[in-house]
Length: 332
Image (tube, rainbow, N blue to C red; front, top):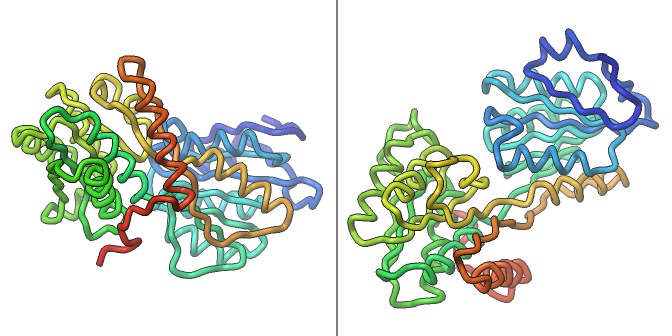
């Protein structure tokens, strides 16, 4: 299959398949601006950061775009290598799981710019861009919404281990947001601190069981974060007919029938951030650290429109630093 000189859309399972059937553009040509995406194992249709990143690339001013869906975590480095060795100007990697490979690749391939979505880097490089999103603000907005939805005056948060800073910011942000609107509300938070390390982010049973325990204690709104672990909590809420608020992707769509109780999901605006970064890089400007904007799924019509408008206003207020969550960036 020959790639056109205009934008190309490459659907690839792995590097071996890609090498066998794709004739690449000449990305070493300075007149052709090439950009690619390497997804994590959730793939391009994850209803979240991978899907948004690809949409952002499609709307960018790149001459050639492509992506590879990583089938296994062991594929991450070779998938990045493929695009770097083909001379792609920008290589976007999506998800915290690719953090080490992205940093390593920025040292190996100095002629490419690497963009790590949801990847904070302790070290900086001239060809490395970190895009992260403020989990404390997402949690804060979710907590504020939960305080308006609850009828029992009790809300619950279920998060992966508090030893992961982003998880701590999500749930402590949730606590802060709920108390901000209602100082009398009872906020119950559970972290998977004593769970099996091998099940990090994939302990669906733990998420489910602990959400059920919070519901039995009177929580009628459940917030969760932490991959499949968090999705277990959302499923429990849906089965128990209580409201749920998700993070990281559009959880209602991702979970299907198991997500029918999800009122909204808050996650990073990857589409917008990718478009912006692509514009800057094409102009020769590399911004090492970007704190991206937040998006959310509008509440459906059974809820008053004021809730959606209020959530939108609150996020803008947080972004403009008119309100602070008072949740530190790292766990104390």
